[in-house]
Amino acid sequence: MSLLEIKDLHVTYGSGAAAVPAVRGVDLTVETGQKVGIAGESGCGKSTLALALLRLLPASAKLTGEILLDGEDVLAMKWGRLRAVRWAGASIVFQGAMHSLNAVHRIGDQIAEPLLVHRQATQAAARKRAGALLEQVGLPAARADAYPHELSGGMRQRVMIAMALACDPQLIVADEPTTALDVMIQAQILRLIEHLVAQQDISLLMISHDLAVLSDTCDRLAVMYAGRIVEEGPAQQVFAAAEHPYGRALSGAFPRIGDAASRRAPRGLPGDPPDPADLPTGCTFHPRCPVALDECATEDQALRDAGPERRAACVLVAPRAAGASGLQDAEEARSTS
Image (cartoon, rainbow, N blue to C red):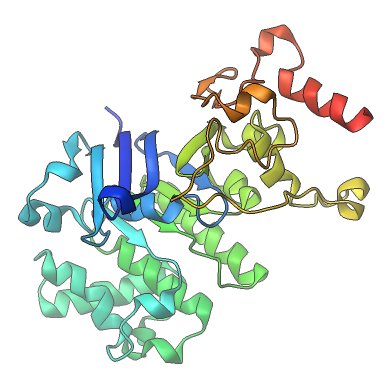
């Protein structure tokens, strides 16, 4: 049985004519011990999806579908059961640690709080465990008496990771855990997360706009656009040779070290993701797609087989057995025209 199964998940903000669809029919699986990444630009629904997993969205959000955590539907849980699952079954590392930590409480008390809420330790034992967790994430146990403002951004992010590990969860959801950090500290935090989840056999769902980070950290990668997954497959394959034009645009936005062509002319993507309240007809990506066909403006595209363990929602996707994909042919034709 998969640890996490998301089935036809829809998240809508508001109601009636003013309803705004943020997540539209997402299906995703995370196996035990697996690391899965979700990529996409801001506004594509990544963080809404992450918060929906533990029902952390505001009351204005309407959720339908299923979120099966170890076989139990999170959306059907009563509040008492949901409270027991948070931190102990699945925990979350939020984006921006300074805004997530309580500024007037010492970090040791904040790390100990989940243990006390779940009655996994006495006050003294919880404090001792907080010190051990700090050491596990590379901070001295003596830092337990510090306040958040006394720590650097990288240190605060390590505190968030320590909190997420406190109750030995089966799944950690990391929502843009390194966005506010410089590249050196970002690399340290990513290696730390990768080491800890492997050491403790924890499943990881990591959200980021950075395909390079996800391809280096995760086993599988899903690309989201306008509230839907438009491509999914092995992380390195999706990053190196995406089968959806949007995945290729995201990958091409990151110059490759040693690749003179990408350094001099990095590929990007003009425009912005569509307003969820005013989605285009047909394939929602077609107004920005460099290889869109006439039918893309009128016909929506579902995920289809794009090779072994790969899926993509594009009319140009062709079976690997047929040689070069339709997407590759279209891009080559466009570059020579």
